[in-house]
Image (cartoon, rainbow, N blue to C red):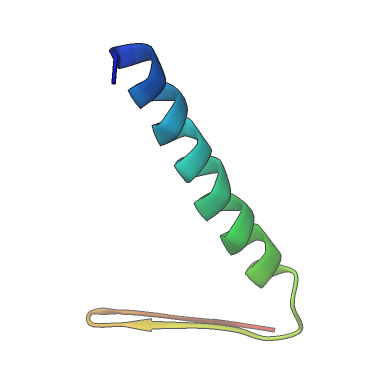
Length: 42
């Protein structure tokens, strides 16, 4: 795997993760509860 493929793969993963968080943020209720971090929203 060359560097270009690695960069493209990393960008695709980042877009997927950000898209997932955006989708979750559009839901009626959002709750992220991690050790040391607690985020709640409606």
